[in-house]
Amino acid sequence: MLEDLEKVSHGDIARALGFQIQETALHLFFRDDGEYTFERVPVHYDDAYVTPVNTEFLLMEGARRVDEWPAIRKVVQGGNAVFTLAGDVDEERRASLGPTELEVLAAVDGERTVSALVRTSGLGLFETCRTLADLAGQGFIERTLAGSTPLKDPISGDALPSESQAAVAPAGGPAPLARAAAPGWSADGSRRFLWMGMGAVLVALSLAIWLGLGGPAVP
Image (cartoon, rainbow, N blue to C red; front, top):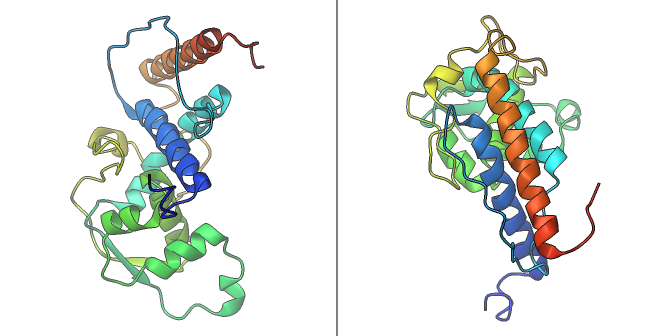
């Protein structure tokens, strides 16, 4: 109906649904435990708006987010934290930033909380916080008010992740874009087992979709 009224476009709806599906699936990687049931049933969806998410992408992106989050969380702290511009930013340095970084930088005004920035950016919890941590690490912004409230995912409404996960962030200066697993995580057999289990679940779901649609398997 909104599309017929020309309030939104077909592409707007497709992108929003794709984003929601992706963020919902990636949210599962931050769960410490859970019960899962696999049922082989046909999966019906409107292929005019929904494009199945690549399973390999979900596995790699989920692992990356779990690895990077402790360092990001250490910089961002909590939902009520506030950042402000760190003095004047010359145009030469600003030109080195990408579109997403420029968008978040423009929204930082010394008054909006991190939670407010997450809601208004449309980037999701992880990407907004990652960008804030990156900008802080480059000296574009600085935190003026410490955060203590949970950082909540705008789609699920859950606090993501738990305080215990954030506690394993490496000591020392901020490293928001560290690619290596945070100390203590790589040696944690239970978490590696959880990731492997999540991978198996996602692969099984992808297979179920292919079988349900009756089409050829996609590499």
